[in-house]
Image 1 (cartoon, helix red, strand yellow):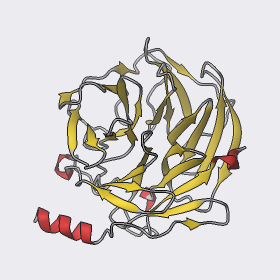
Image 2: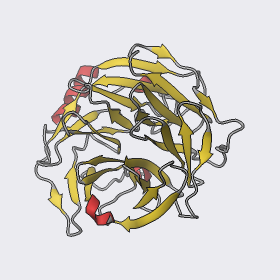
Image 3: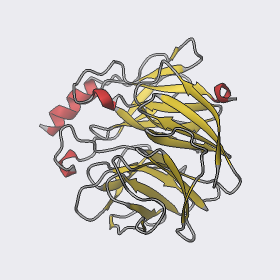
Length: 319
């Protein structure tokens, strides 16, 4: 049954999606195969410039060449049997490439995290967390660790980059007693690391609040944003002192300029693009911002607009 199912999936992929469509806005739409249903994560491999995305439903990973529009399947689906009962279930959300041949994947409702071989999709390690309702949502990399957000549990998870073996994790940081208090769902979502790895920046989705986490002291501080509307914030992307916030519910991108100590942020520009469709995560590639059009708002009804897609937005649009 598994072999038949996989054969059917692969047959429906086509190994590439011809040509990227250039929209009038200057946004390039990168069409994905139907098997990339509800793409949530997006990552850029710093070693090659290749872009990776995944299906929230199956965990299938796809390699995308934004220059040609070519898309290819990487590996097999993650184990849906491990997902908590929910229909439909998300088994994979945010992901990051470490430049050392590995993808780090947030395992959503499974409560797990995965490390995959970037070339073959083979799972190299699986990190598990204690039983209970979980939503491992996004991941950020520093030189020595991967940090994962959990939308349902008020904790932050950490996995060492030099210990890629199956491991049972315990929370690295509890938000009890910090300025970051879980309230109305959804809570923590996107996460990025500063270039030196000293700080993490996270967004509380429903509240629209940004926080700075010190990786040395574990101190948590709210980032002052001067009442800039960030509710519905999902993915984050950081380029120097500029932070891009993907506001999923509003289908827009907000560019913020951060102070040198990452404690305050000033809104630089807020843009909507007709090509965005319930956008989730984002990653910077050269002079482009690559955004995943998740369409998760259409998953329950089963009527997504096809093809599924990523969009490539010129960074110059935010000047």
